[in-house]
Length: 212
Image 1: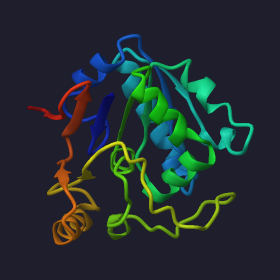
Image 2 (image 1 turned 90 degrees about the vertical axis):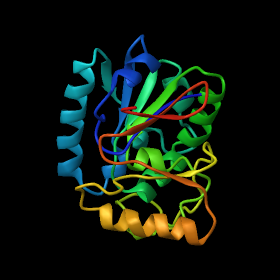
Image 3 (image 1 turned 120 degrees about the vertical axis):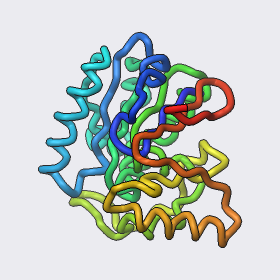
């Protein structure tokens, strides 16, 4: 399994990201910002520019185009070397992953080491088995048009620990991140913290944090 999970943006040392997908075809997923269309486009433009600057060939991958029983997301992922998942609202992102069958397809692709999964903020925290505690930083009832209102509390269950992003950082969600960490401690939930600039990396081995 190959993961690059940044607290914010591409992180201070994205060389490990480049190593995970040397062939360089990346699908950028912006659905965590589906409730903020203006910010969505702005972030897509800046992230595409930064990823292209690292040598990747970047193309949009809108999960909304794969909602429903006729989803072709598995076939789409087979054409990519990596996905880059932008931050935003974790609960919106989780809904989009479920509605498109991305959650099932990415677990299978990662398990067979056919793709790398990368991104920041919501992209990282959605990988634990539960989203409990994330309501302290994201509104679970912020629902974009065309999305169901049921709150998804189950994460992708690909990591045995939660990740707290924006921890002790100059970010608007840093205070909430401290409360999130307190929630995990109080409930005996294992977790790791990331400051903005840091990224947790897994490359078919134990996790490590960059910059080292």
